[in-house]
Amino acid sequence: MPKRSPSNMPDLFTLPLTGPDFSLEESFRAKGCWPVAGTDEAGRGPLAGPVVAAAVILDPKAIPDGLNDSKKLTATRREALFIQILATATVSIASSGSDHIDRRDIRKASLDAMRRAAAGLSLAPAHLLCDGRDVPPGLICGGTAVIKGDARSLSIAAASIVAKVIRDRMMTRAALVFPQYGFDAHAGYGTKVHQKAIADHGPCPLHRMSFSPLRISDERTRNESVSGSE
Image (cartoon, rainbow, N blue to C red):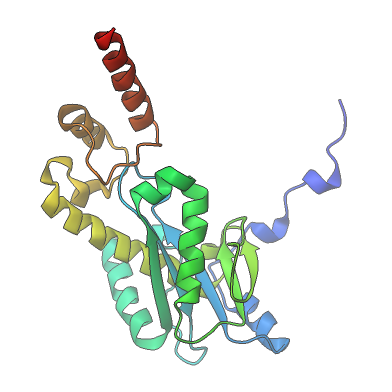
């Protein structure tokens, strides 16, 4: 059996052992590259709703305590930190809707939302720390992809919180328009309750028809329609 080449070994620097800190931002600041923004998205996986991206430039003298990956925080804690972030940081938000996602695919739609969020900052960043493996194309500044960035960088963690809170609020509003799907309970994720609602009522304009099982269901419906017309 061939030996694993060193290039395939896991990068220990992508495996955070503690919570996020400001060391990545400070490393760029030490090089005269400032301000540094962090960006992250929420909503890559759901069957319905937009993917929402946020870009955040933290004030080093007023960083809220307790910033972390939004998925590790309770909804109450996220809301409290969201208010603090908006009060102390420079923030921008952008989103890509379901038809954008269906046209381009979720990865490209997510990166596009991150790029637009960064471009919308009122304070132009000198560098952008991007959660994940990709840097959005077309940035107005340099960018660095940071794997598990919301667990490593406070700026990315702040962006993850903003994106998550905004998206959850959007899906709560969507539930008022499409109450039959229960978007306020599952935010568009593919829970059993959500999938049953799709089976009972069919998809709505917020559903991502390129996502399985919606794509499979749509293909089956079209095939049945063609067969019935023959």
